Length: 86
Image 1 (tube, helix red, strand yellow):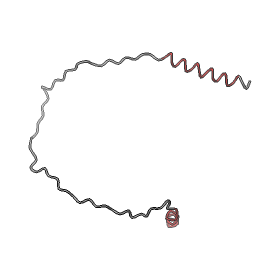
Image 2 (cartoon, one colour):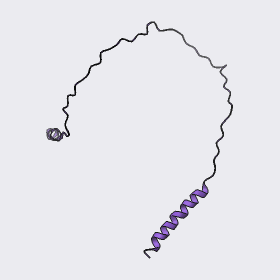
Image 3 (cartoon, helix red, strand yellow):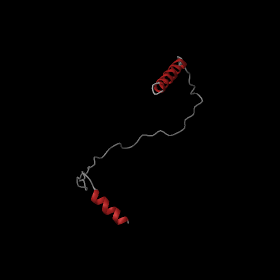
């Protein structure tokens, strides 16, 4: 009985895989080779203008120093924060 149960499970799994493979069909997708767009009825209203000045001023980029010291963990700070909430 111990041998028959795993064999039965393997047999059922194998037959379900074979059934799924036999249900697959070759699907062929066909797209339109040519499509025409009609833009004659399209009306666009607006004003055209050119910008007066296109200049970008250079800016000074600050380099900030990390305020938090490098530590592997913050366990003591977490404990004091939890104690303050209580």
